[in-house]
Each structure stands twice: as structure tokens, then as C-alpha cells.
Image (cartoon, rainbow, N blue to C red; front, side):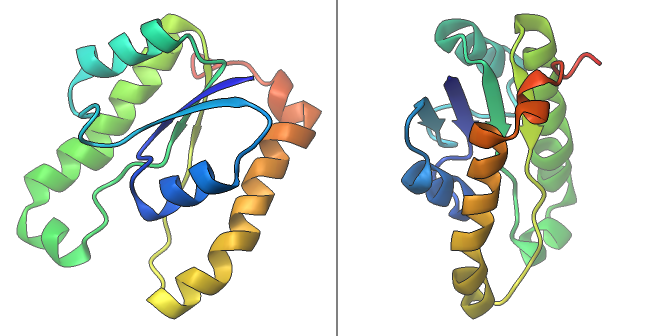
Length: 136
């Protein structure tokens, strides 16, 4: 299976990249592609032809979001829309991973089991594999 992960340099994306095996997984950080740029996101989807796009990218700095709501909305809302539209237009299924804010200690404790569950869903749950792409 070919997978493109947007947000590969963040906490969740790094964990996914580190734990995922057995598939052709390519990760993209914000330095590689700005999800606020719809044409850049679409170009990645067209070039890599993934079967799945995973969105693990978000602007998660709570204080930063409060102080800069325009940036928060363009990344977290518009960026997600751009990824969904790229998937709809180019064919892969997509998965949006929600964020929950935890203390760093709790994040470290929960990250490994959470990654295991996410990867199990992609590699072992045939119902998930059979779902249609974001257009449905």
C-alpha cells in the first residue's frame, strides 16, 4: 500500500513514520509542502499516487492559535480542506487524525498504543480498506 503522510515532522507524524512498516510510506513536513497551498498538496497527491493520504498536520500551539487565529484557521481548516479536495480529485482515500491536548508525560505514555491502534486500522481492518475516498 502507498501512503502519504502530511505532518510527518510533528509529534503524531513522527510516531507514525517511526512505527509504520510493510508499506511504501512517504512523509511530508511543513518544509516539504504547505498544506495551506492547495496546488502544492494536489501536486504531491498526483506525483506520489498514494492509496491513502493521512493528515497528521495541524497548528497545535494553543497560545499561538489564540494569538493568531487567522493562521490557525488557514492551517487547521483550510489545510484540511485542501488535503480532502486533493484526495477527492486524485483518488486516494484519506484519514484525518484528531488531536487531543495532553501533558507531555501523558503524550509519551499514550503515543505508542495510539500508533499501534492506528496502524492496525490501516493494515488489518478490511472494512477501513474498503471504504471509499473522501468524495463519499
